Amino acid sequence: MIDNRYLAEIGKQALGIHSIQFNFFLVGQAIGLASATSALIFWKRKEVEAKQGFILLQHLILSGLASAAVAILVFPFTGKLVHYFEISDVFYSTGKLYLRLGLLSMILQAMYAAINAVLIASDQRFKSTLLIGLILTIKIIVGYFAVHTLAPHDPSSAMIVIACGTIFSVGVSLLLGIRFIVNRVDGWKRFEFRSLSKVWTSEVATGAIRSLAPIAFSFQIARVYASPGFFVTCQLALHLAYLLVLPQLAGTQIAVRDASAELSEGRQMWSHSSWFPPFLYTSLLPTQILLWFGVFFAVPLFSFFYKYNVPLDHRSFLPLYFLGCSMGQIGNLFVILLRASRRNFIATRNSLFTELFLQLGLTQLLLLFGWATPTTIGLTVCCYCFAYLFLNARSVLKVRLESSSENLSIARQAG
Image (cartoon, rainbow, N blue to C red; front, side):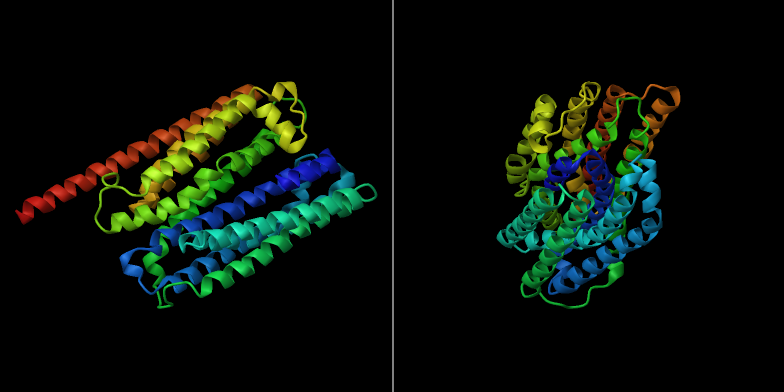
């Protein structure tokens, strides 16, 4: 969001290029969170005592390799992306370089997301906050310098400096985070990869869906029947949604860790749960309040955060989008339980159906029939988010019934 604010001051072309690069952010975030979630699932389980260090190393390497593979695949097509989203030829070279720097930032970001989650899991929240503050401080200083010193004379150089500032800030925080964790982990005994491969691959698959669906969606959005800039409006809405759901993003990591530990001890999903009450009051409810604030006040929020005047025909999309996000975050509550019970593949299946088939499929039908407008796109988002909520809630109920049946069978045999 800091980048959006500064790039909006440079101009609409700069903001458009950054909106394209945000797709790389989504990939890095998805891979990093997938590895982080996998690490947190195992972090406090009984079977991994004295193995935390090796688990951390495995997930850090996996994050780096997976994101680097994506960067290598995308690198040759950065120029075509600039053309597809109709960036001016004047900014072609700058846009291509900016996107390529974004790929490097994506790799560092994926690894940092895993480190940040483990900092939280190892009760080093203050240090995690310090590192995030460091990233923001560096980005504010670099962005201010670029906009007020370089941009009036050379907008292209200002953009590249902002991109390099991101790489530097995340890279420094990554190194510091590793240093903070190394001396706090509970042992470095070897942990077999096959023991975590099923969980990690399921999380990466979910992450791939979570990142590829918005990227494909952005390609579709670029062809919606609306006034120019609807793609930028959608990307800015996505950026703002990340801010509004921060309470739940932060609480989810702790909830996954603690719920997984409780279930490994034989507790039921909800009975005598110690993780759910604090998650409800500090994460889920604040997120819902913020998202509903977005439903009613999206246009003023865009003006405040981005200095962006939302075109009139785009405004019908925003309340529907944030309403869909509200339903989606409730759906993520049930995903915590699926992950904690190591039913990650069920969460992956539900994401695959709703995000790839339902969201993208409905949007493509709207485009084919000429019905794709900001309003219908917003309704599509609501539809797929409700389906995501319904399927995850249904899956948790099914898992709980299966667990109850197994416990009853064991009790009868013991009797």
